[in-house]
Image (cartoon, rainbow, N blue to C red):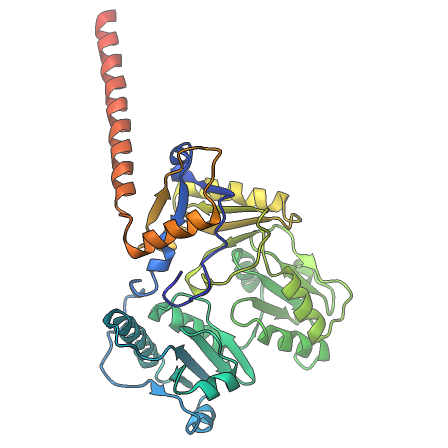
Length: 406
């Protein structure tokens, strides 16, 4: 469904329940919603005032069995784009060139960091790909030490730069002051863990640090050696608290002290949150959810007063149902995806939802351009015009009534 992930979707797509502050009126028409996030991978505008343009210098090299060991030794971090064999199709060639330019731009921005950028041809280097465990063409992998990390985000230069910079940082961030505690508490849309340990030399801290490496940079790990900080966060020695996104209270991981394996197992078991924010850096991360579950996609602009109020309602729903394994809520802030578009599927009968095959055919028609995605925008504008006309008509009636009273 996406340019960079052949078998993954931005989120579990099910016709169960969809919420959106601006779309409650349309919901009455029994439409089905698809967000056009898949359109963004090659067209997202680069953020930042000083993001440079590509200077034309080649920094990305082709990785082969012959140069693999040499390249691997040269860098602390190796970013690999595993691509399908080059095609004679001009559209496919153009898509490949766009991704190559993105990688070149990222390599240019991070030129002074110890990060290498390479491309692996799935056909020419099939033996090397098998050795590295690569099985999905169009994927981006990062080698760090003995770890292989698959990038689940949007294939855009600004997103990749931020992701790689996070990856070269230490896996655990140390908190030493009340100001840092306040900053920690303001992080609400990420999974985060924090532990209290005697020192960096503690065997329990080392186990915590090694566990953090398994999830870097997607899950944030924090630690403190300060008794005052630990008291403020209600942490006991060698205890680790797990914070689910948007929840008021953390979960104290039981049976301290922990081994690396125990921490990894706990995080994997609890890393699917009830409410998660769709972010460019991990928008293609997926879970296998129950088809009979409740799956909600909610749209709310946090910067907008109405959107903020709606988001607070979502948070409360998630908190009240955090123990319900069948509930999944994905929150999308339109500000994060300024180029996203919406497409609505007409459903004649409110009680007759489309079959999986009908839905798949419709999605393919949208992606191929057979369905005009501008039609919905025109309908929305007409609805808004009708609402304005109704408002103006009401005002005129009120004016006439006032004149009659006089």
